[in-house]
Amino acid sequence: MTDLFTRKKRSEIMSRIGGKDTAPELRVRRLLHALGFRFRLHRTDLPGKPDIVLPRHNKVILVHGCFWHSHEGCPRAALPATNTEFWRTKIEKNVTRDKRVCSELCDLDWSVLIVWQCELKTINVLRARVLNFLSPMCGNRLSPG
Image (cartoon, rainbow, N blue to C red):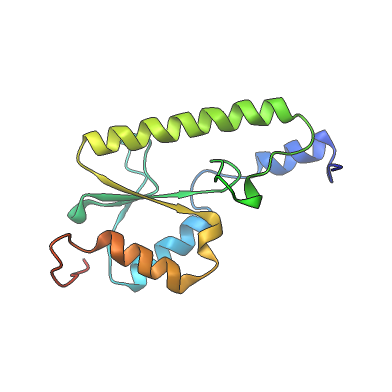
């Protein structure tokens, strides 16, 4: 497979991708807000500065890009054809950090939901997944807020 971009062009494209307020993250935030949930963003006092924090529920939502966090089995997670070793190393470090952060959050009694970029295609599926994550274990009526 031939790469569509030169090394310089790919570097330019990748450098413009930010870590906060990404389109996938904004989509999840809009959904949560529409469902009546209130949340905090990127709390620096929690491991990994989670994307979305719901303190009342003691839950966090991490919105992962399929490429950057190596979503297993997803076509978006394919490594570029050029500079492959660089990207493999970089993404392996991301995955290792993700595992550590999830573990640290769980040790602090936070529940973690990872939402993958490719899962945002179908909003009804995402809505059901988020509501299931945020609903109490005892089966009581969900009360947003």
